[in-house]
Length: 610
Image (tube, rainbow, N blue to C red):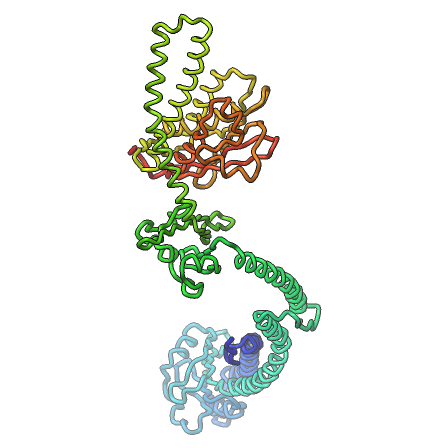
């Protein structure tokens, strides 16, 4: 695994977050402190200026209201005003003027601008004070010095509360803002110191968090290699400590699971290696993931060569099956690997692997050499075909003989009835056999056609059972376990009726008096599963697969007594598989037999008939 650099690590993120939190806190506190300090300093500054203005205003009111003689011994108003202005503390006051009610300047503290004394001023603020007698003040930027100044204009009242003059002053606020700048510089230095200390503490805190995580990362890498012997150190009882404890528990569980899986893998490997049948496993796309030695020998390919190849290519089915998903419907097939005179057939049985949601995650194919079996089966098919043709002549003769008896030989009252009864029974049995043999022969040679249509299976199955229930003579009860609702199947009704007739007839034949036959239908994901269960003698486990073979009888003596031909279930098997279904049997000796088969459900988008 690639090592994570410091600049991408969670440790750096912890440090940055810690520093940012401290920085935000400092900025919030600093902004609030600087704002409040600015307000406080400006208020104190203005209060100081106002105190001096009050004293100056008092002295100027005395000067304006004093009565003067004309002998010239007393100073003039202008001289007295200038003396008062000169005595004013001019700290922070950059400009001070006293103006009479005629808008003439009587005094100023600006020694470099004494020539304005006696001249009229047009300052708007002064004119408003003289006109309305109200005090005005404001803060503005001096356009010449570009300094912030506090400007104030105060009226001077006479004895009768008339405005006799005004005081106009400008005071520099730079001292206030210089103090603020000094405080901000101190605060900035303190912030840098706090951030440095926070970074150091952040590194220490981040290491205490990331160290256990790094240990768990190293342990996970060790576990990925199959080593579960090491454990993560638990450094505390906090959330990280609890995570470490949980991680150690996970390590123990994985160790146990790994050991169990490894044991099962060895068992499976041993089973696959010693199987006589070939096994091929694929993923959901059909790519081969596993092949045992038996399959490799049958196909003439090594497991390494076949791994990763498409299953249809390995089995040479690319011309027969286009989509791998079609295998789940085929169930089983014979694949011809014959070359020239070398006759070689393989039977492939396909099954799907599904997850808990019934989605296909892979396929399992079991292959076996059925060359000899197919040869025997081919001979049997030929025999059935020959027998069916050979039986026609004796049947015709027997039929003629019966006609002769019925025309005159019936007069022998002892022999004729018995002979006729036996002949008629044998004739009917042989005719049934011929029909069955001919039907099987047509199935083998694919000379028959299915006339499929859309059928609602539950109501159809009820009709079949009703027919038997009305005609049954034995003391046998029929029990139904059929679901409600509509389930549509694409099938040939006549052929499926033949299948059900064969299965139900066998169940009735082999059921004891007072027995019960149970009919059941279950809806599964893609198909219906139909079962017919009797309470007869049952069939041995090793004979279950043979009951669908031609001419096979589980109980030959009883089957012949009941008139069976041994072909009913074989025909049923062929017809069910022609409908893309499967048929099988479950049985316990002495407990009865259950015949089960499946039929694919119709897709919703399918409409019409074919």
